[in-house]
Image 1: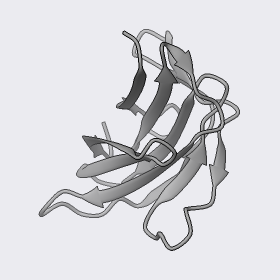
Image 2: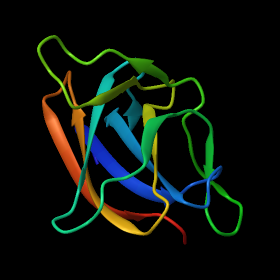
Image 3: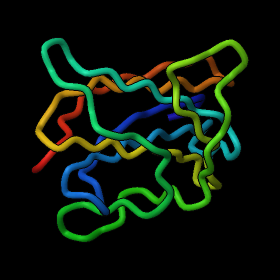
Image 4: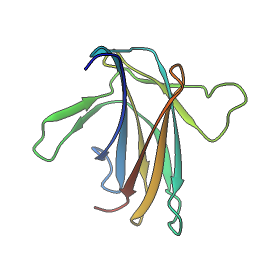
Length: 132
């Protein structure tokens, strides 16, 4: 499919059994956009507890069979745009990917928004974090 494409996908954490990794991807005509800024906002769903921590994640993400489904190696933290608060930002790597890891000590539902700053696009996903 041609044109711009922005996605946000939740995966189980690779490093913390109590976490999830949320991967944002940006591409145009199937080619990754490297160095683009993506800002993430994490909010608990109504009635849910807030997560314990969130940070930019850089590394491989695998599925249950061990196959690599994303690799955010080379993605780096980035400052939030001027005048904006409540976002954790990162620059996409050479594969057009950036991610955050969100953890909680008990299962909780979070609504995660990825803001693809340069494109002005938003993607949203609800994920459960905490012990799996």
